[in-house]
Image 1: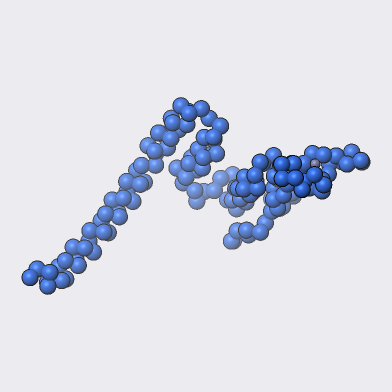
Image 2 (image 1 turned 60 degrees about the horizontal axis):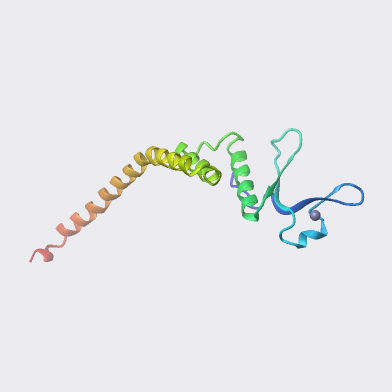
Length: 150
Ligand SMILES: [Zn+2]
């Protein structure tokens, strides 16, 4: 099943209340001011038991809310828990990107060193494969052009 990029909604809302005491949400007139309210995503998840719509707010940018929505949809596709097509290294890198801004520099450096260690076997393997494929065409090209020997 292909992912549907149009699923879910990203919008700005706030916690202002109207005369009836209910939150105005996305209907607040002050939302014409870009600094008012926060970004929120909502997505219908048929797999959820109680409410079919998942809402999360408090994002400071539309991009953050969209990224979070994308993550939710990815998890849903993978069967909620974790995307099994994702390698552990990829997962940790994604986790690192999400956590790094809120961690102390020393902690971030330690994480980064660890990630480099666990990621290097894969990059080393692809690098050696790349050098193997790049040397064989050039050696065959040299043998198939006798004119170069003259
Ligand atoms: Zn408001």
